Length: 279
Image (cartoon, rainbow, N blue to C red):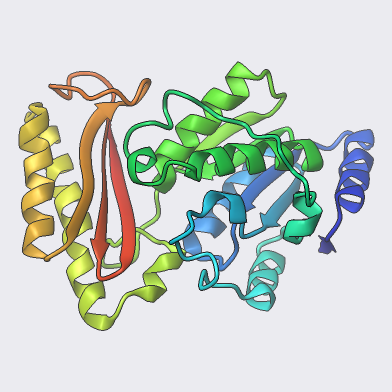
């Protein structure tokens, strides 16, 4: 496995692989890898000949009061996990490699980025779209794999690629849960033992709503109410709970077409997201 730190090194490797007829997959991450990330690597192996994992804590997607400085980092651990899972290369640039001192060009998706996380994190998806487009241009991957835990992000990246004619296929992979059903996230480590226990109310509510939908409940407020009741029992502070169209992220009155039931909830100071695709 190789580790590339510069744009030139990464591009040279990708060009060499393509010249040899290889298909290249990218798994974009911010590091501190867990089993959810590794599931994306496994999917990448199914779709391509060469797998690149990017490890970059992207400063432009963090707001001024968010957790950039304390976001967990452990490159040695991540590198070992990548090597053990057959990754061909890690692209691990520093912020000065990715952003010039006078950087002033942004990619802004103006519809799907507005609801949900976009309400309380207004610059977040601008940073996500910009860094993802930069990664696609640097790695020159044929396919990129995103997890469904970050469902809004994946839908926005698919829209960006479509709208800007970016020559990369975006594939989404299933959300991965801990044995107790908490959605896997690098931020789970922030939770105290009590918060970790209470955070289960989020996944419990999401899965209960999914079960109700499968049993025939289609009313949006009823499904949202199941999640809300569970989270309130866990003393979580609700950012949002929505039932939106999978295509447009616009609110639905009934889950009678492909829908996304999603929530963002604080337990202590830690903001967790979870969701389920219905239909």
